[in-house]
Amino acid sequence: MPYVGVVLRSHAGGYLVHVSGHGEDREQSHTDSGRVLFCQARGRLKKERVAIVTGDSVEVDEVDEGAGTAVITAQLPRRNLLERPTLANVDQVVIVQAVKQPDFSPLWCDRYLVHFQLELPVSKPVLCFNKCDLVDDFDLETLRSIYEPLGYFVIFVSAVTGAGIEELSMALSGRISVFAGPSGVGKSSILNELSPELDLKTGVMENDFGVGRHTTTASELYRLRLRGDPPTTLTWVADTPGFNLYDFLHPEPKDVAFQFPEIEALKQNCRFTDCLHLVESGCAVLLALQKCEDEDGEAPPALPDGPSPSETISLSRYASYVTLVQESLACKEESRSVSKKVESTVKSVGGEAKAKSIPRLNQRYRFTSRRKEKQDLRNICKTDKERQGGDQAGDESEGDRD
Ligand code: GDP
Ligand code: ZN
Image 1 (cartoon, rainbow, N blue to C red):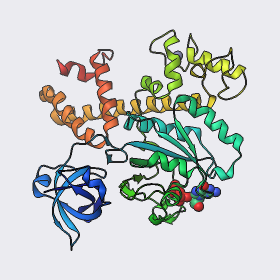
Image 2: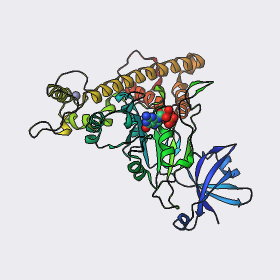
Image 3: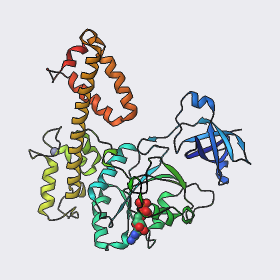
Image 4: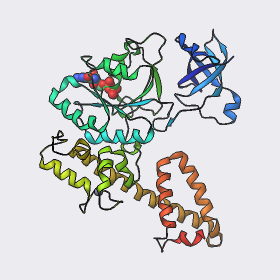
C-alpha cells in the first residue's frame, strides 16, 4: 500500500520526502505528523523523465523504517507549478519587504507583485512588511493606504519584537506558502520567529560568490510548527533566493496594466484601446494621476465627493508601472534581435538552396529556448506573429514562410 508525501527538496541524487500516511485514506494521514524519508525515484519515472520538484505530491513505497528510505512510485497531479522558483502545489505567495534597512523600495515591491501574479494568478500575493520596529505608525499607514485598497492582504510584522507574527501565523496555517523578497529583509528571521526550532541562519553573509546567503536557486520546503497549530497540522513554507533583475517575468508591454488593479480599473476610459498610459491624449490613467496630484499626495483617501479608491492611483505605483512597461519593451526588443540573429545563423548554415527548411529549424531552436527561457520564447513568438502580420516587408524570413 503506497504512502503519500510531499517533496521537501532534492538531496544527494534523490529527494527528501515528508511522508504523512497511507494513500488509501488521505484524511487519515493527517492524524500523524509524519516523518522525512530519503527517496529515490523508481526507474520507470526516471526513464519517462518525470521531473519531480519541491512541493510535488508523490506516492512512495518500499518504506524501510530502519534506514529511513523509500521509493517514489508516482507523482500525483499538480495543482500548479511555479517556474521561478521551481515549486509545485503552492497555495499562496508572501512577499516580504523591509520598511527600513534596506529602505523600502516601491519599485522592487511591485516587481515582486507582478512576477508572482504572473506565476500564480489564482491567488493574490500577501504583502508582509517587516522591521516595523524601525519606523513609526504613520509610515506604515501610508503603505497600507497604497496596497490595501488594491485588494492585497497587508501584514506588518517585526521579527525583533514579534509584532504581527500571530496574524502572519494565521495566514500560513495549514498551507504551502512561498516567502519571496530581497535578501536581508528578514525572511529567515521571520521564519525563526514563527517556528523557533527551524533555527535558520540569519544575517547577510559574505561568501565566495559575493554578498548574500544564497548561492543556489534550489527551493526547499520547511515545516512550520506554529504556536496554535494542532500537532497534526502541516504548514509549509519555501524560503526563496533573492531575485536578480533578469529573474523577473515580463508581461507584454500592453499587458503590464493587467497586473496593476488600479490601472486596469481606469483604462476602460482611455480614448485608445491600446493605450499604454504613458503619454497624454485622452488617457484616463494620466487624468486620474493629475487629479491625485492636485489633491496633493500619494494615494489620497477617498473624499465624500472625490474620486473613489478605484479611480485613484498613487505616484509610486504609477512610477513602477512606467518602469515595468519600459522593461517589457526593452525585453521585447532584445528578443526580437535574438530572433533575427537566430534566423540569420540558420540561414547561413542551411545555405540559399535549403531556404525552405528555415521555419522548421527555427521552431526547433525555439523549442529548446522554451525550456530555458519561457518568457523569452513568449516574446519571440509574439514578434513572429507580428511579422506574419506582414508589417516588415524587408524581412528575409517573410518570403521563406510561404
Ligand atoms: P533574509 O536574507 O531575508 O533571510 O534576512 P535575515 O533574516 O537574514 O535578516 C537580515 C538582517 O535583518 C539580520 O541582521 C536581522 O537581524 C535583521 N532583522 C530581521 N528582522 C528584523 C526586524 O524585524 N527588525 C529589525 N530591526 N531587524 C531585523
Ligand atoms: Zn491610457
